[in-house]
Length: 382
Image 1 (cartoon, rainbow, N blue to C red):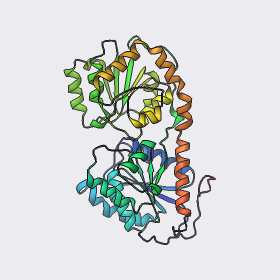
Image 2 (cartoon, helix red, strand yellow):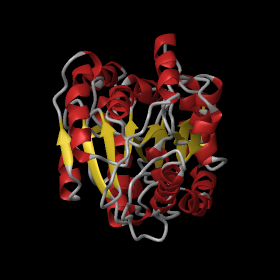
Image 3 (cartoon, one colour):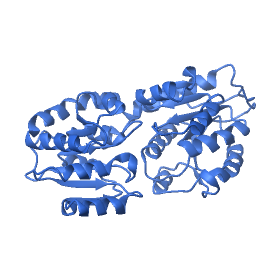
Image 4 (cartoon, one colour):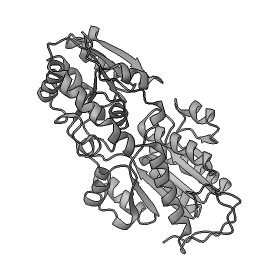
């Protein structure tokens, strides 16, 4: 393996690398993780290798030191050089990368800067990755100290499909800020039920399936769509062609998703593939009845507390939604039943504890050569 440099630091510095700071599940997790690691005494820095984004202001508001480089070169490849230079300046104990662009160039920057510990989190699993991407991931894994899978489904994908080394993979399920969740009571549906979906407007999230399904549902409904993305114009055109556009509100990026969830009657999660599904967990924690794609990770997270339909199956989604609208009381009870389990299993505190435990183990290894460290005083830390 690559030799690790000796270092003498006055605190525990962790640098998180992302492609951008745009709105997305992985970016939100890094924001929450960085904020809570800072509260526990870690010196946290964030580097966006390929541009800023809408979440930059939130990182700044949380007083998390952030460096943003512009996107240059194929897949942000030219970001390698300024990132390596910045990592050398910061001299972290740990570099932690997220999402493929940063996983690739960020890990290479960390390796060549001789960072003692390199960690990556796998936030998703892509069903159509080519052999070159998988080969690259396998090569990088051989030099990576830990690969974090955000769900059991992602862990199995890393083992069975990507064939990464088992001893490198750790499971730490994502968490949500339960303090922000506004419960939906067991109230009846509105006369015109309010449906909600939250997610980037891109092919993975399956919005086209949802719109086509709702066009088949003859009962009253209204749909709120939270999110932006490259498919926005196409999806709006599809809604017009399906003659359902007047029943849809396109809400863009919102900071009041918790309020929208508590006011909704059904949460729709039509993704074609997922590594976790933060939006679905937030809906489940609020006690909202859920219609979700029948994905391995959705079964893992939502258990039996949701209604499932095969991903991309328009008639099945239409039938599932229509069945809930026709007989909502059992589905409301089902959603309420799952709240305590979700709140127990998917808190941010449990997630952060998991990362701190991995950091502790990696830095404490005899093979990790460090100088004298003055470490965070948090009892859960090193």
